[in-house]
Image 1 (tube, rainbow, N blue to C red):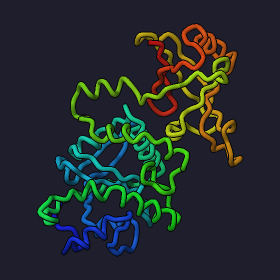
Image 2 (cartoon, one colour; image 1 turned 60 degrees about the vertical axis):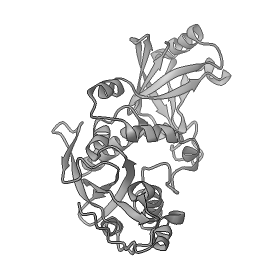
Image 3 (tube, rainbow, N blue to C red; image 1 turned 30 degrees about the vertical axis):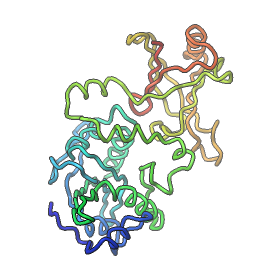
Length: 320
């Protein structure tokens, strides 16, 4: 990709103006024009394998470039929309592989699932990327790829909203993201996910065998009940009201029980449209009694149970 950016950075004032207050001053006509005008280029196309369960990536450019800003674009016959924006200091190929496997971190699972959904709906999914270092600001190098990330997220969260497009699946920096979800967003987890070396086989073995961790606190309300309230930041890793959830129970790495539960989105619903954060309910006759006894045998009220999200609609609880 060319190092020439179409916006003109002629002086310090223009640079400051462009990146301050989340404002991007390049003119634009539609969703994709903004990225092209800034210097983004097509870097990858996404498809699914024949079975439809794995993402395939065909690179067009910037495969080995590091310190890169990227955007997932969903296209149909007459429109295009930005769906996710991210930045990584590692190579473009490395970061994309994290989304390709869709394991280890909630953001990987979220993006992986969204891309599969869009492709299964007949849409084209492409990735545009940008990397640029400007070294004429007080004789210092400015990392535009990193500096523009939140401004671009802010811009497209507003652009998508104003033009009737789907909301970005970004959480941090997204002004139209659910406020409750944003307030508990774990920035460190997302940042770690961006910087992991996904091309290291040992790292891959570790993150594909483990999931995104969270703590399930046994408040008095939950201690004698057969349901689980999922933290709001993991809302989009669970399906619609009534969908099934797999729950595995491990003791020192060994699976001792597997249960099937149901998603209840009505219990925490404030809008009346079954869109509340998920409560996972295990029927008493289908393992609910076992779950309560397992908690009471191994934990005290107010204890924290180690849990992991291994994938979409899949939870692991650990004793040790």
